[in-house]
Length: 181
Image (tube, rainbow, N blue to C red; front, side, top):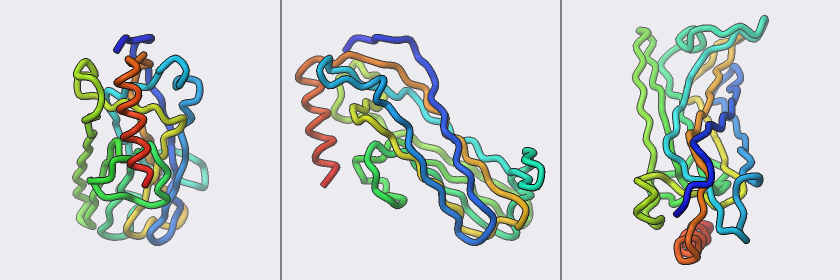
């Protein structure tokens, strides 16, 4: 594996609208970074999820806690295949997931994880290698978001472009194909 670039960041923001059990989806295009002919992929070093509130009347950032009417949870996942729903932790397409739990007393707790690529070269240093041309972000709020507000979930991905050996590229392509089934 040879690094073609230094690390850089990709970001995407989803908006969860007011109401009960809101969901939002989006894609992150990797077409400019992934090249099958050159065995080029994206090495994901880390993924951060940022949770914010929004006053929809004026667009201003507000506290996340001001957007909830009662206990609730906001979950977000980053995958390299479009599953159309939140996935379980054993799904090979899952890259990272996060969760923010809120209770009506104003207490929050947050957890984030990233799954290293088990099929990439050891030189990937525990990162996740993606050779698909898109990644998918899905966020869901299990609770009620206050009218006149919204929740904003931003995914921030630290990554670099790498060139893989033929064997490493093939192993990741096979693993990705198997995950598609």
